[in-house]
Every structure is written in structure tokens, then in C-alpha cells.
Length: 179
Image (cartoon, rainbow, N blue to C red):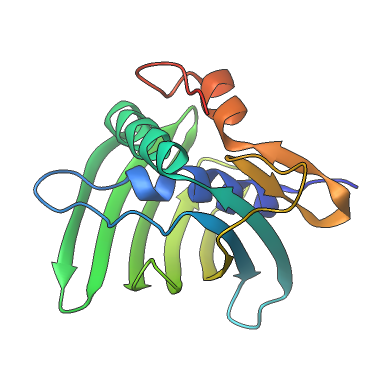
């Protein structure tokens, strides 16, 4: 199975989104357990997939720390604030030649469900792009399936990625992630 850039960006975002918060607003921790996250790209959801993630308190905390470090390193401008029941996060980031501007709206209770809608502009690639990604997450159970450990993200096609391994390999954690 070939993994496209459109697939990796929301996966990386999933790993970092809970770390996007800068003081004084912090995103609430997700309920530990097994989560299902449906990801759609574009206004017509031309590309969609479902990911399953095993989350525990240590995983959420490590992702928070890694996300904060990544935002500080890559983004000249990043702000998260509350607007009513929603968290709104605006960023301007640079990753090599690529520059991104994004507007993220996060809603939900983080205990049973949450939704993330990301609109953005990407420049510095052969062609500039406007993007729209929607993630709808719902909590499935307290326990993760046998053989699935905290930090594991089960991708389509039977691929399992571990968020902790990704955080460590990308060097965005202040301290190495350990389950």
C-alpha cells in the first residue's frame, strides 16, 4: 500500500494536534482507550480513510509535549483560543521549502467524540494548494485489542504505526517517548 502525502499529513497532525495548545488554553486530554478516527480530504471527501488509535494518559501527554515542541520549532505564529465550545487554532509554519497557513476548529468533549476541521494553504511545492481535512473521532472502548499497545495507530491495509516511534524518529519530543 502506497501512503500519500494527503494521508501522512493528517496522521502527523493526529500525533501533534493535542500538543498544539499554547498557554493559557490547553486542549483537554482524550479519554484513554480505543478510538476510531475517520479522515476525509476535500469538500467532497474525495479521499477518506479510517484509523484506529490506542490512547492512554502517557500517550496523550507525550503527544502534547511533542506537539508543543514541534509548533515552537516550525511555526512562526501559532495561537489556540476558545471560541464558545470550540478550540480554534491558527498557524503559520515552515517545513523546508514548504510554507503552510492553517485554521483548525476542534469541537467535542474528548471523552466520547471530537471533530477537527482543518482549512489551509500550502505553498513552496510545485503547485500551491488549498486544503480541507476533516477528522471525526469517536471513543470505542476502554480496552485496546490484543496486541495493540498505547500509541499504536492502525492504518488501512493492516499497517500499524506507533506515535511514540514517530515522535522519537522526528526528534520533536523534549524527552524520548516511552509507553
